[in-house]
Image 1 (cartoon, rainbow, N blue to C red):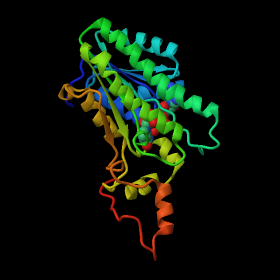
Image 2: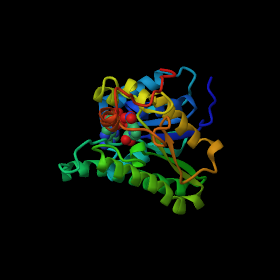
Image 3: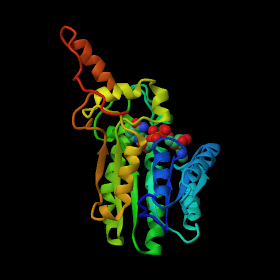
Length: 284
Ligand SMILES: NC(=O)c1ccc[n+]([C@@H]2O[C@H](COP(=O)([O-])OP(=O)(O)OC[C@H]3O[C@@H](n4cnc5c(N)ncnc54)[C@H](O)[C@@H]3O)[C@@H](O)[C@H]2O)c1
């Protein structure tokens, strides 16, 4: 049996039918928490909750699917009320994971695409934090909110201006909220993944793992479990004095690393077959 610090607690994880959110939800259940698996895709949310429940024979806690748009404040209110009603369990952990990555040339980027990014990444994150914090304030005893940012909120990246701006905003929100939430015993932090191998990123680029193993200074691509472990630490009593922070989980890329586009540009500019910094893959 795993270490189970979250028995008697409920967590909401938005956008958790796949990818990073799924790994976070599964991990939290194994560590004792009841988990609300939110996704905009109803069928995928049901399937994910079922898979998570079946993954843990010894767990008394359960995963509950709750489908809907994590960018919609009215839906968020219903989801928080649903989670707060789970029997013998306290809703005091929130993971605002759902986020939209919309690539596009800055000069061509449309107001509609911009709005979609802002609605989910900023409005959804802001109002989930607000709605959950209101409940935590009412029930007393503090709580813990983790916002999922991105390495692209810390460094410029080709064709991701609106997304990068939104993720930098999420990181700033974690700082801002120490003022209203700190006195209530509610921690708020941002965990920012670097390039992480998920169903979506693999679909975008079949050799996603190989490319990022070369670009990341530590020689490997991120796995959803890397983010799940970090979120778990941020929610645990061990991190109780950490709030308002952004933790990058990126294999060192933000400290020093090119994007695939800059790498290609550099390749062309380098003299006589010189290669990109030579890093080897350490694990898979
Ligand atoms: N994967 C990466 O490399 C990476 C890197 C940096 C940051 N991130 C961030 O991590 C988070 C998760 O990324 P991912 O790659 O696992 O996500 P993803 O794109 O694979 O999406 C995960 C889930 O979110 C759901 N979703 C989409 N819109 C939704 C909405 N409006 N409401 C509820 N659910 C919705 C999707 O159906 C999907 O199941 C995002 O915030 C993303 O920006 C990811």
